[in-house]
Image (tube, rainbow, N blue to C red; front, side, top):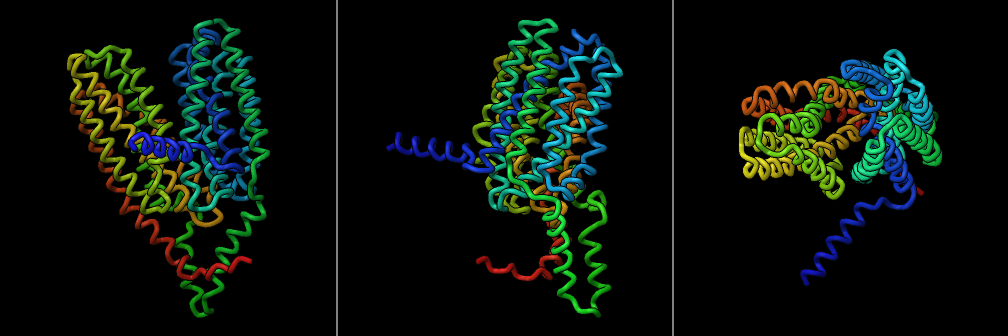
Length: 450
């Protein structure tokens, strides 16, 4: 009986992991191909720039910081373009551009060329995530969007592992030829992504514009002429001229960015903490990264249940804040601890971090998919990406300054920051939903399907 139950659980898990035939399956292939390319390049690029191009560590860091800022500047404009044209065509153009830009890296010979290409690649890579989320919104029904996003994240981690493994082989070989092979494989992966994107379904610009116009027209059409001024005032309050002026949505994106500090905690703070503040062996860091990746692949889909509505997504974010705060306290306990104490605490803390990570990812998808006004998904996805940009820009320095430099006290401060961010999500989400409720009150009943 126990064996049968275990087999049933495994079959259910496998069914959740494998995307359904059709658009979800096509998007899955696209995600794996892109993540393989991402894993290839990210795992070897810093060494390539140092040893082959001849840049200093300071130049690499400065160039990538400039590139990160360039990417943030274009997320919202590209999102607006997706609202006008549909998401598929801009996404296809982004992948085609990335294929050409990565190929051009093979000819870089100095800092100026490196910065120029890094900025262009950052613009395209930063835009690709909101564009994929917008495409997910266009192609899939409401109750399937979060699950599809969860499946894509699991597959992305799987592809990243494959790409990193191939990059590891190139690093062991060494030499400029091996690095050039990695760069050209990365370019080829993005060229394949462009071809795969062209085969996906999508909504054209006319349909997107019609949805936005219908949404606004139906709301106004149900009002009498005497109430016209009130309707306009109400419409202005729920549909700001720019997504950047939707204060509650921007605040939620920043809170999600704060909760996404789990990323630099895992990849920046913990490695430095282990070798500098504990007596645990440095190799345990690789084990922690493997634990994180494997658990995300295995449980992201299951952990996304509950994010099918905005309030449910906000509750996942609240739970994420609590869990991430707890993991920081576990890490704080390892200061100056012997290996036999530090290693188990680090493993437990990482497991708790993964639980918080899973909830943060699902909750973020839920809010970014459910809260944008009709016809403005691309623009609002671009706005929501600013929270991730905050984490990528400020996160490494923040977690290092707090956790690594301040020790236990820094971990406690970081735990408090994460806890407050998580607890603030549900009330702010309720406030954001209230600004959209008048539109629902005036919307006509959906026409019956034939």
